[in-house]
Image (cartoon, rainbow, N blue to C red; front, side, top):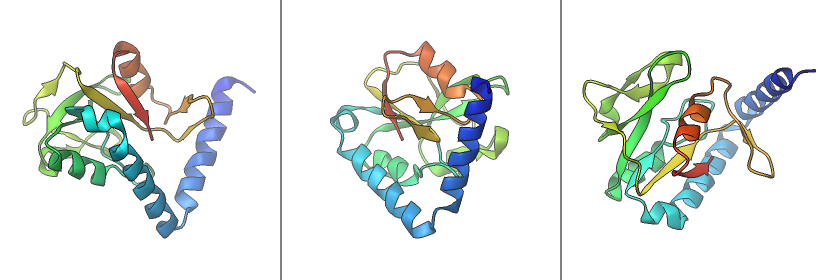
Length: 160
């Protein structure tokens, strides 16, 4: 079997595990992840939070976004620039700054939001279907975060 086939099987497995998880268990795990992130020194020290806006299958980021707004941090969410795996982050000031984009994912409205190009004092919340013990990430298979992170090695990354 090829690496691509292995990854596809793993993606299918982890999507099924997340989808089949009882709602109360999932909420408790999402809450635990939220508590862990906001307790990190990296979160406390940062001025900028780059984070995805969660879809149903992903670890919930709504409370994190609300907390970052409350803490006076700049919040930026990714917007797909094309279906070829390119994205940029745009500042959002509320959930009203979002619309459905590629793949039905909530994204910043480009005409309404400012693109962020300086990531100093920022952290990046990185989504994944799973991570292994060494921290290697299994993403969703489109390569958006892989491309973005390889171009911005200076960013502090927090995988959830």
